Image 1 (cartoon, rainbow, N blue to C red):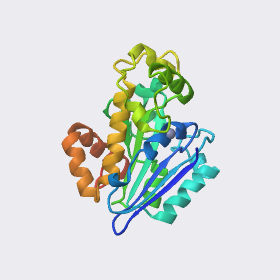
Image 2: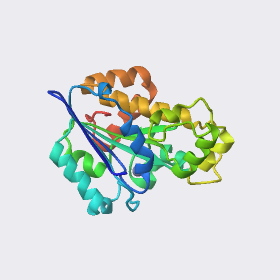
Image 3: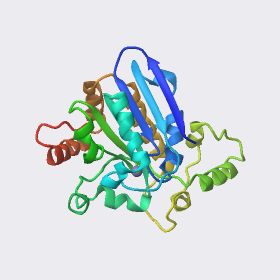
Length: 253
Ligand SMILES: [Zn+2]
């Protein structure tokens, strides 16, 4: 499942997308990274990596960057010195409230994640790397989507669509079957969650939309303009959190 892709469109920004940062997240993130087509990329150079299973250690812990995968990621950042650095993560839907809770600042020492829409969360990257390895102008983003237990998901989706799907194709996520709220728990690690209004297809669409915005924009300004237009309230929050954790003049992206 380990995956690498390099898109060279000449002069322009350098972008680094990384999925499979820890745990089983690579299983969820790989299809999104594969599904970005050549025309979705801006000018410049884009490097995409998606990693296989590794032990789960949070990126807000120092220990993470002492592991093999943590060091690999630091090395990639140093090697490519990107203008855009995007980490794709996924989370257990049962942690949704915790992740967006204002208490996260006290309990974890980091700001809450921001729900863009449809349970797709956005934040900066770990404070342990943000200032150390990137310039202030670098766009650093963490994007989170509820994780998929892929094996269960495939089995069930195949039965819904009578096996008539290409398992390597992201389009299968957009099948015209709204998966009922009550069925959703089985696609996630936790069986007993009952989050209201959670819709897997909508989450996928939003997640992919944001990834494509990031792959397409050429500058920080362009990204900021699009985000302010689409998500004014969320950007306002991001500005506030960036100031709190990184200082008064720090940009939200
Ligand atoms: Zn993660």
